[in-house]
Image 1 (cartoon, one colour):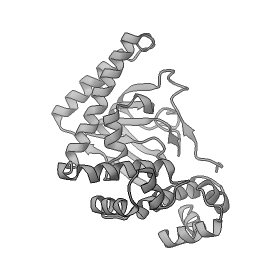
Image 2 (tube, rainbow, N blue to C red):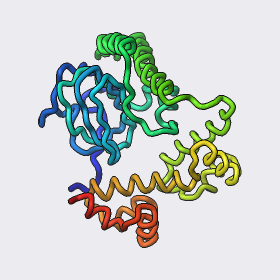
Image 3 (spheres, helix red, strand yellow):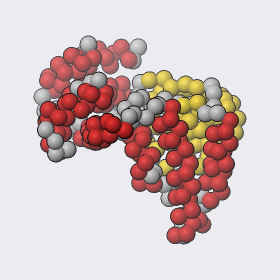
Image 4 (cartoon, rainbow, N blue to C red):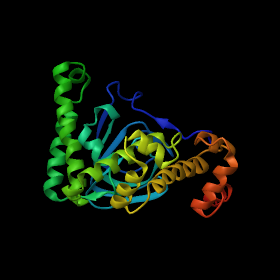
Length: 288
């Protein structure tokens, strides 16, 4: 086991930060370096369109599986591993963060529900196939090296990922516009927590960063999510702690330090309270 969870980017396979691959009746094989890197993180987004076949993968300890036409997104930083791929047809898109349009990042990074594969109908399948084929045809070194060509590729990329985001929003029932202010603040809070959970540990520090009062932050987050602001901070800490316990051989003391705790005994007590067992017990049970 390694000291860190491997983090991959697209630099080894694309100098432009975008990879578009058609998948045709593919079945998982040991030498499939694009789709099977073992347990790892990516610094980029992965947008997968499954037209047919059977896919199973692990994303942050949860099993994601579908045997129907569906779209799915893996966010940068999520720990994942391909478990099974059988007779899969569709499209794979890997794209670095700064090429993903703001609207798409807003949908997936600030979502209030867990990201799961979303089924797609025949009409959307046709649109996705058409857009993906165009994107692949234009996504060449020659096109990406020119200003005009890059503009075309970026436009097609916006359209393709926009279909993913639009479909995800429709399937997950957009919230009432009357709650826009509360929703906006809650989403900003969730994004900030993902970025700063190792250094900012209390709701009051996030309220200060968002230029609102701690009381108001607590009120709006609970109203929108049904959970307290502290719950979401501790949830992010707990998920990352579990990743490091399961997928690295760092000691509990080293993990505590990695997560921003100078007192590892405090971290152990917090983990035990949230998880119902100690970090060591969690690690032992996950490796059986």
